[in-house]
Amino acid sequence: MHEQTPDTPPAPPAPEAPALFGWEFATDPYPAYAWLREHSPVHRATLPSGVEAWLVTRYADARQALADQRLSKNPAHHAEPAHAKGKTGIPGERKAELMTHLLNIDPPDHTRLRRLVSKAFTPRRVAEFTPRVQELTDHLIDRIVEKAGAGEKGEADLIHEFAFPLPIYAICEMLGVPREDQDDFRDWAGMMIRHGGGPRGGVARSVKRMRTYLGELIHRKRDDLGNDLISDLIRASDHGDHLTEAEATAMAFILLFAGFETTVNLIGNGLHSLFMNPGQRTLLQDSLAAGETGLLETGIEELLRYDGPVELATWRFATRPLTLGGQDIAAGDPVLVVLAAADRDPARFADPDALDLSRSDNQHLGYGHGIHYCLGAPLARLEGQTALATLLKRLPDLELAVPPTDLRWRGGLIMRGLRTLPVRFTVP
Ligand code: HEM
Image 1 (cartoon, rainbow, N blue to C red):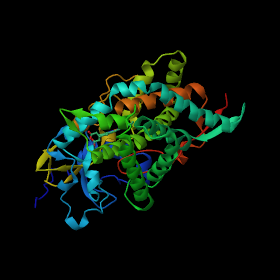
Image 2 (cartoon, protein in one colour):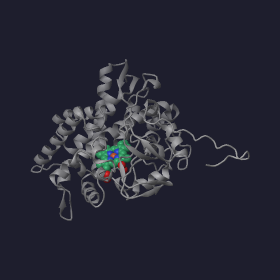
Image 3 (cartoon, helix red, strand yellow):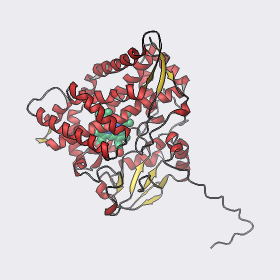
């Protein structure tokens, strides 16, 4: 024990960590993240599931952690006692079959699968898809407008009527899911997004139906290859190596799974940020009206940095003891990299809490970093840019139909997104 002498000022009381994962946090987690970055940058937290994990909130530490090979994606490295496994909500702990997907594996398995899928899911395939994304976007806006009637004030929920269906139809078409089956996917995906990612009840059934359907589709397409992504996954070969049917199924599933809720929230959060920053929105709208695309391109990246869909990167587990940001981490400990906190770090970004659509020094972590860097980033950019530009051009006076404080956020662990986005507009 230390005696305090009259000359030493009393130590300031240890600042108290803010409440994490409650309702207020779900609405606006950024003040809590600012506190963590400053006072406890690698912070031990108890998650709502009861699992203890390290939250990494500074940009430099986050970037290092995302690329650190000592942090494994394989949940088998999680040190939780065996009896607790499967109850944590950590993906892949229960289902051995999910273990074959990219986000749950390390090199060399990851290197092999990623190389094969990269041969099928190419930037060129995405670029060729541009006119179709535009058609799908226009079709959804047509439906919203038709519902309102000519010359009237229209109302819509842009999450359910726009941000949600666009990515699900887009990825279905790209994969080669026949049109008549795409509404099933919309329903299964709706179940998954409404009830969170956990493999429970209706969600588990939806996941199972989707996987079964994709497995059968891949089996059928084997003898009837077409010009779609699933056919390319079957064709893909690397020095004589191919994806097995089970691997192709897992791959198609992860493309759907990783690519739809993220894109829903890119569109939803992006629109929300524009509504809350009218000056920036006007700049974007003026530049689109002038036929320019530069601000749209930097703007989508800035919307990802400012309030991106992936709040925390997916799980990582320490394979051996390591030190991160001065904090010792034991082997077996889970580590969650908080992308949303890192992307507002004043040590990396000038005026980080301001939305600046023209920001050019913007190496944000919204798509991750390192070997697991988002495979679908070109498709997400295409969908995000097309969705926002078309909506703002066709419905220029679009506005929130409720006070911003009435909006509700989903409050999931990995994703950040709105439940609904009610808007009003004049029908063109
Ligand atoms: C990985 C974000 C859209 C497919 C990731 C990761 C992030 C991310 C942060 C890395 C996770 C980690 O390291 O733990 C996003 C965002 C999107 C988006 C913000 C939308 C705005 C998409 C789309 C697809 C996709 C449209 C596919 C159609 C994938 C896949 C991986 C991945 C397959 C795993 C890559 C690997 O492990 O090698 N994404 N994503 N994503 N993303 Fe995306």
